[in-house]
Image (cartoon, rainbow, N blue to C red):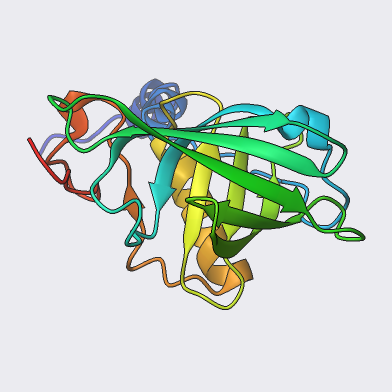
Length: 199
């Protein structure tokens, strides 16, 4: 019967220990927790400009739209012009819709009254905005409507999941209905993305 040298187990252990950290590096690191401004006033000037619609609960006005973008322009201290651009499919012509809005007094610039087609009144609320104004969560008081906006047309999947979870947990949005908005043709047909109205 052959005896195992006493030093052999220790030698094998010393050879495998350096591999442990290398294997651990292959596991994806948890996404950093994203904090936003959910309480303080919104800087209206910083909020102006172009916002890509990354996700939304589909509604009768925007359903099936792709390449959706809102551009905000401050007209007066509390009046905002919104230019909504979209396509009904990536082979379809670009369309746009002009919307006017008024920021409610004493709301920290969070509550807005908007008018579609100049006569149809709606309400929206800026729920949360990133410290650097790179993303924003928008809601519609009293209705299951919500939007995820970003300054760029692409958003990291981990960040999107965090923001969707925040809509669900902090703002009671039924995120089962939340759909990502295709900003590029290759996103059409992917799981979780809204289906365009036309091809």
